[in-house]
Length: 202
Image 1: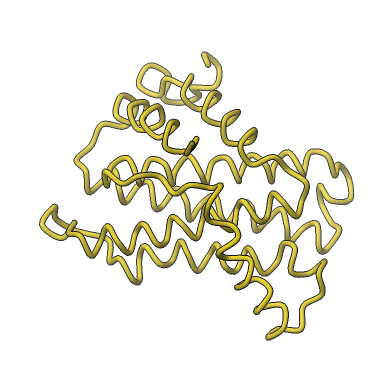
Image 2: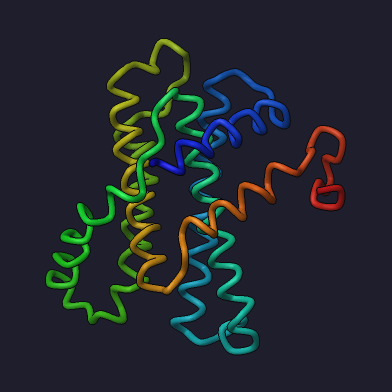
């Protein structure tokens, strides 16, 4: 059973209530949110590699930040699939298809197992998110949201889910637990009534 697909309408309907907009604006916001959160995840991994800031002072908090970013990336991805009326990628089916790509990258870039565990997967995540913008061509009008757009967007989303699954596997995280926790937390927020800090009332 595709548990991400079950979470998709919960996230999408929450976004409808909190951030009402036309479909194009909603899609662009969701993609931009993924870009923001991949940056947050990359920040955590970079600081750990450098062993500075939270990596040096509070490693547990850094891990919590990584999990938070993983959950937020997925929530934004679910929102994108909701507005494009696409079935959410199945995390149980995808990772094995992408493990070969990670292994190939290890060989090409001569990365050790430890290095490829995090750094290269972040590069792949960036490539997938960029795929929305470069390959799918973010639409300016509803006319441009055609089947080609949906196909390319689904490919980008599949890569995101696969590489997050692989990252969680290699970090010893439970991807499903992270996402379900994040969805439960996020969908309690009411940004309409509390636009400065919805967490206060969540």
